Length: 120
Length: 108
Image 1 (cartoon, chains in turn yellow, brown):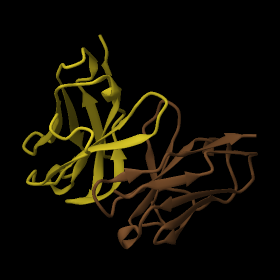
Image 2 (cartoon, rainbow over the protein chains, first blue to last red):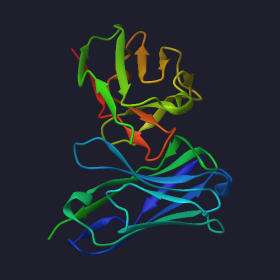
Image 3 (tube, rainbow over the protein chains, first blue to last red):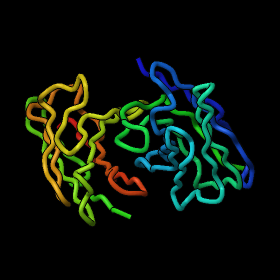
C-alpha cells in the first residue's frame, strides 16, 4: 500500500520560511515523479512543484518560482519543499502527491496534507 | 498554460440520478492526458479517471469519462450517497499542470 505522510506545516509570519517533508512508503520511491499540490481554504487545487524520479528535473508554478525549492532524498524515500519569502496567499493545505511514472503522469496517490498558515 | 473550465459549478441531484460534468480546455490536451479526481470534505483528492477514459484501480464502473482534444465529460451513471463530493479535472500533458475549478455535486 502506498503511503505518503506530510509534516512540517504550521504558523509562520509573512516573509518567513518553512520546510515541508513527505515520507513515502509502499513503492519504489526513485522510480516515480513527486509533486506538491496546495489548496487554499475553501478553494480549489493548485499544482505547486514537481520533481522527477532521479531528482534531475524540477518544475515550479509561476506563483512560487524563486521562493520555493523542491528536493528529494531517494536514500530516505523523502520529498521536501523549502518555502521562503512566504506570503499570506501561500496559506493552504499542502499535499504531497505521487505521479504515475518517473517523469510525469496523473496523481495516483496523495498524502493527507499539512496546513501552512502565513499570518502575523 | 492550459486553462480548464468546469461546468456547472454546482450540480444538485438526488441519489439514483445521473450526473454529467464538463471540463473544457483552452487548448488541446496532449495525448488526452486528462484526469478526474473526487474530493470529500477534510480529505485528500483521489483519482477516479485518467487518460480521459480509463478507470483507476478499484473505481466502480458507475464512474466514466470521455472526450478528447478540448472537451471532456465525466459521468456518474447512478449517484450513490457516497458520491456527493467535489470533482476536479486536471491535465497532465503539458507544464504547468493545471486543474479545473471544480464541480460540487450536492444532494437535492
